[in-house]
Length: 191
Image (cartoon, rainbow, N blue to C red; front, side, top):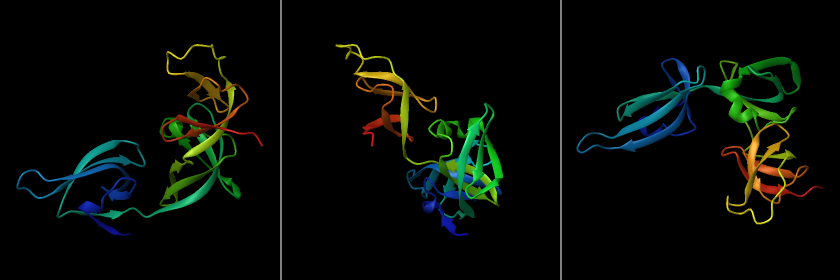
């Protein structure tokens, strides 16, 4: 466990705060007039999902959380939970509440391998690839001359997620999607 000074508490780090693991969402170091510098952070509790705004002063330190990574296979979602199994050990199954992982799971097809962050050997959250390739299941036909709306239309991909795509995308096309933003990146040529 590394000890982090106030200015080392940066986004994407996972720290121990009040005996719980927190992910640093944002950090901004500033100084008000003649006072000492302060790191204004937003932290997300990895267990409950709650978000806190905490200021760390220059004399404060925190410890980095002792986390591990494990590969897991996405199995399915059933409204309230999303189920995964450890890769190579299908008996080790676990779930996350759907509201905690919905933003990531909407981009996952069944049997997709994801990275799971564990803390004290308990699964905390998942990390999915930045770009995924999915098949377009539904897309309205393009209407010639319909570029007033910026030349995009709403399409449904194989996982059920909806994405704004260019007018030339048709059902059956494979598209690459940026999972961080949920935006269309490009069409993938079929092999």
